[in-house]
Amino acid sequence: YWGATVITSLFSVVPLFGDHLVRLMWGGYTVGSPTLNRFYSFHFLLPLLMVPLSMLHLFFLHKLGSSNPLGVDGDDGECIPFHPIYTISDLGGVIVTCFLLSVLVFEFPRLLGDP
Image (cartoon, rainbow, N blue to C red):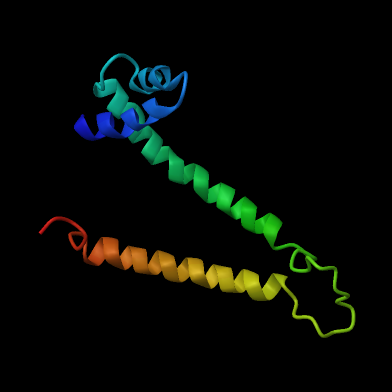
């Protein structure tokens, strides 16, 4: 309860409606079990929302012509194609990151905890 109280109280510095915002997040005048349930649900659903938005971002970022902000003529064959090279590079980075995170979680679950 203490951690949720401290973190949500940081929103009270918003001028004019900070206290109302904190009470809205708490669902009352103190942090209770319903507040924590809302926060746990939010922390569970947020990654499920961020993954599709990241994919959408990459989809719109890696389209033909998006690597040419200066308008350089790319028809002469001197330009490197953007889409297949950097898309594969990004995919490789995602795979390596997921692998390292999986190793950390499944092989060393207590590594980042308290001693």
